[in-house]
Length: 284
Image 1 (cartoon, one colour):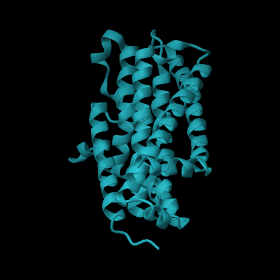
Image 2 (cartoon, rainbow, N blue to C red; image 1 turned 45 degrees about the vertical axis):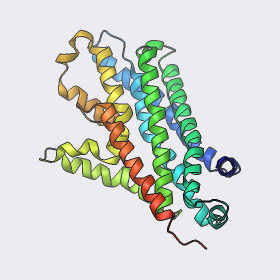
Image 3 (tube, one colour; image 1 turned 135 degrees about the vertical axis):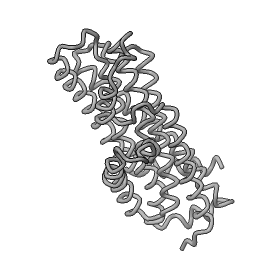
Image 4 (cartoon, rainbow, N blue to C red; image 1 turned 180 degrees about the vertical axis):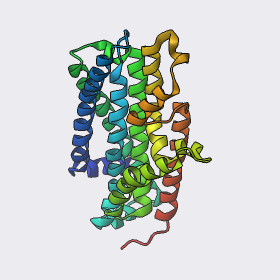
């Protein structure tokens, strides 16, 4: 098994996929941090808040929710690209049992998912810090930044592992790129708005994209409101939360850990599906 894991790391670092997808994660992270401060400038114009606005927390949430798609694509391509390059036969022949290939890829991609998560958090924080004029209060305290950042790394990791399972299940290098993009940015977007003000609107936080976004946003938004509103937090109108969730992801009143458990379930389903199909798929 150790040999398989080493082989997977060699495959990763001898190709350009890992750093090619890391670049947009870094760029989007920095841009989200910088734009978060611009959003803060607009709020300051209203002159309603005397407390410091910890917009860095929201910036990390925003950058994570955009950056996770690249983590998913990396995980999916780590498997599907072997079918495109016709190297999967050799990979399966050197592994016994065949399922050990999937576990080796999951372990190797775990490291890359953590790398993506840390890079995203650091560059989003750097962008927010520079945009705020080096104001550390932009993060609402070290513990708040650490908790949101940790959730961001965890979210990136789970999206990567889901991608591995998805790649093993579909095994088509074109479809594993197109389908996630279409679903996350088109299908679920339309579905979420279609569910508004309907009797089944409560299922929206349990959709895959919404659950994934909620891992960070359902933690960052309440922390942001708590830092701004202070003792008046219980009196904060629901519309304020909903407006923040609209821009930064997540769902009002839905705990972040519930989103984590939901998305963990989706990850397990795709990994199990990839294992079941991959163990029975004919390869040439």
